[in-house]
Image (cartoon, rainbow, N blue to C red; front, side):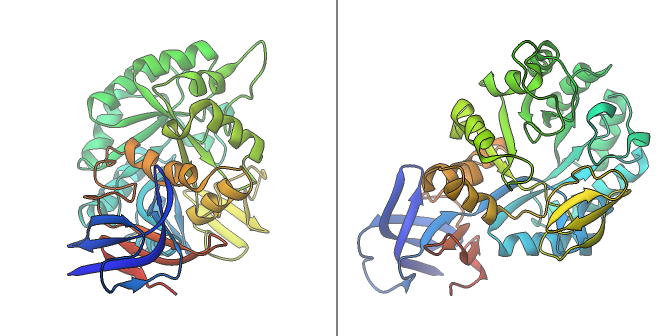
Length: 378
């Protein structure tokens, strides 16, 4: 089946142009400028951007990935898909080895069905001093042996693990992850600048939500932020919701790392797309008030209620990025992290037709994944 989308403003890595595109068998076959050759579905000047790629997400629509429950996971994926996220990796939180293995095994089924792009272990190998919304009683030292067991449970679908570089056994565990084809992310860490550099040298290549759950920048003690921002081997995640980060800090990270090393994430939890109330995040209880998620006991920020369309819109309106820049850090760069940039992440010939239609106000007006409508243009 062939589809032509006409009268569009197509956002590509090179910029924005008025034009059209054709889709056949779920892939983009032509991207043209000007008027489409022949009849097509007119988009009325809507922007067309690539589907968003979220590499750090704990759930939504009342569903939580850490439970491993497939129905909850499906609800969360559907919610984020309707907000433009066509590729999503499920993030787990610190739990017992048995619970992590069980959740990974269950979610691996959804990866094999194509619903998820992979599994991310955010913990348990993180700093007690910077554990955020993780249960400190369940934290433990990094263990290559335990990691191998968890990877086996995930049946090849574990794509990333967050590790605090300063912990005993951390560097060996980073090396074990990389040797197993898993992305080693550095974060939830109290590491020094030098310890973070050691983590990068061992193979760490992602900064888990840069700035959050790590020491702040200091002119005599630069800590992990400076190390992660400066190193060309590291992609930095940013939670661009206006709660976790001031727009100036998002802009600073973007200007240092550039679009090729900056990835927007949601770090969303079950309350995304829902109202205020009480929710679970792994074993922790979270209270959501005015859309902000915090641990009920301590008040610590506990993930977000963010969706990627909001993160994208804020990147343009609040941070001051161009549409092409915002599109790159919401789609192409995270796709590159997952090793999928040859298949998705930009409006380019040959790539999967994962597309988001946006109004002049950058509100989602239609979403397509693999050439099929998730929500039809309106």
